[in-house]
Image (tube, rainbow, N blue to C red; front, side):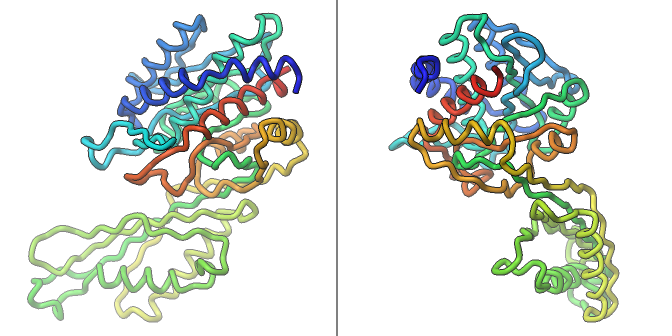
Length: 377
């Protein structure tokens, strides 16, 4: 280990990092209401002597952008500060027990954000100003909804590389699944609930459509790499009646090499055959959002330096494809090379049991700091 890297990792302060993470988790910041957590982070960073730029996304919502070193940053650390909406506000706050930090956003991705902030503070403490790498820190809003924070940043800046701290269990994801959102609507004929034979039940039709589509080999969870998840199901609410409308939303996560537009046609073709088995079916299929996946391979700067970093930290370097949707798709589509790497795992993200191992957060801070040092030099 070089003296410079040893000094940098020594500057990573677990106590300060724990305080940052727990205080971030105390602040409720669902998509669209991120200002309180951004004010907290802005105060923390300006108090440490950094010039923090607000990048307006819309009124009352903004990204935070900080840079160091000379010239345009070669690498940005990117974290999203928003979370999904809380199920129970009484159970919102952080809880720490046996090395686990629990709470909304703990792994997705306030753990990653806190680690990035700590890496930033450690770099500034460990290195003289003239040796600081040319890197940036970007804390964005809106990832859990439509990615409007990252989209705003990309209108003005397209760095060569970014590291996004989504929960990967510290696996390095140079590949990323694509995403397709499908909407199904069935229509029927309303009748009194005691006389269903006089109507046409749109919910029954939808259930049969979903069973028909789900049985296709393309969605076989044992054999297919496509991730098929029914996200929402709702019907017209009219009291004691046979419902005449039903709507379903389906999330489809596609392997990096699958074309979402071609897959869209496949799904539409499968759905079109449902009418052969469902009498009187009135079905409309729409696709509101599509994002292509990618695979960068490992012939790039970040991949080359990661092996050495993990070896010195005595961590196994695992390579994977990120299975969810993230702002990584937006960055890649804009010509930026994204590495997805962060503490925590998708298994608990968006659940009431969301959690992150604190030692993973500390390790992430050291990895981010070392990547900045080596890739931003």
